[in-house]
Length: 632
Image: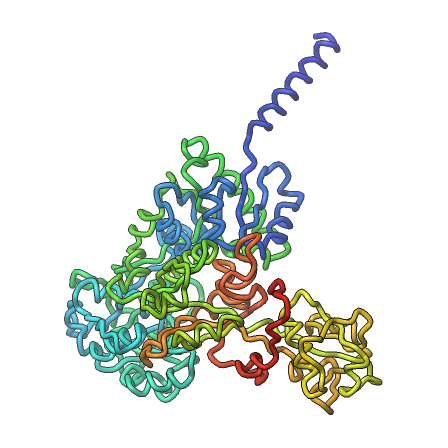
């Protein structure tokens, strides 16, 4: 072959390879936007060359599911609860294509299996005979020690959970367990409100009777957790324990390795759902399982076996490189843990089937639809979309009671007429809500760094404000009210107060205080403080967004609503453990700021602690003749 022909052949081969490469799709991995940079860092690793994937930011995982549905993304690293949301969005369009397993259980079909453990000498042989037994649980609200037992015992008609509207959803479950078991160890926070928590533990004291510290009934406790529930049965006074298989093996020295056995496996058996028993040295008879985490895609991306294989191969390479990444936190945020193993499914499975195979769909839905829902009103399409997203995320993550979204042109009136239960009102709407006999029960809390403060040079005092001038953002109603508040008692017409570009007194959010190191805070008429003390000296007076209810709402319903929003805050607030699943604060839709709540809020509270955020004070500060401005 001549050199010229060789060159042509090489060029042709290279050209064909380039065409083939160009035909290969670039798969779009959707990630919550707070992890976008970390995803990009993993893909920027040299070992990722040629993997042909890119990171697409979604607001959170709920948004990522929508982007996959809209074909704006192809795949998402997800947990079973996310798969449940996908099932309720458009089940037939989503597919679970692979799993994220652990090294030690890489061949197990489920992440873990919930089991019932009894002593071999126990007279308990059926689920019905559990009534009156002394029970040991991992902890309140946990899967194998609480949610699964309630689900299965209820589904088999052994446990009856009251639908009494006079007690909260949480108390209904506690009451049922208290009446079913004679004594228990069920530690944890029964409510995020300490007084309610104490009250429930006092009312249902038998649920704490078997704990190492019954008066505390909280972590740490020797008889709590996966191994603690077994210990409660083995060393304590328990007669039945709810835990998972992995810890049975560990506790009784059946897992191999050098871990010493804490108990004698010959003295215990698994209680099976059908009334039989099995030795714990053999296969377990679990009555519910938690599925593995995994990757979820859309039907179009994996329509053929070839497409499925191609996407799985890309994910496997991405996952393998993630395991080797130096930034372990970045990998963990994308569900790649150091001991994780990627496992491709033989075929793509729709989420409903995937969850039902494990019996986990019933666990998520354990309270069914019989219990009354809390109806949140939406006044526009953006609010309705956010309500729906919150409902999906909250229900899948065990926030109860269930939220229902109602749309109306006048939500205050809708609540007043009992067409809805809740309405979110901004500071300007408080007076109108009051006129309809509504009252606030939940308030947003702004990030402390967004709190407005007044700063001035050391030479400028409170009495100098009219002559020194005040500079603030006139497009912000919050800042305008703060300026009027600052002038209080100085004899200045509140309707004449304007921002002075040359003003020496500045009203700014605390986040900007780095520029005012040589200034001091103006705190009241005589007090001056260093700028580092900003949290004790706000000039924030605007009323926050608040959740309003009817004034005749019962005390139990009020407590239920507070508990629900406390759960929202703990799970989806700015510092919540599931903020990547659904971000309840921050921008929800581009072009629609402050949907329901201020984008800069971070949590929910049940009491306003700033004494200046008072309805009467705000009303006195407002100037009705002032032109309407764009709300901040």
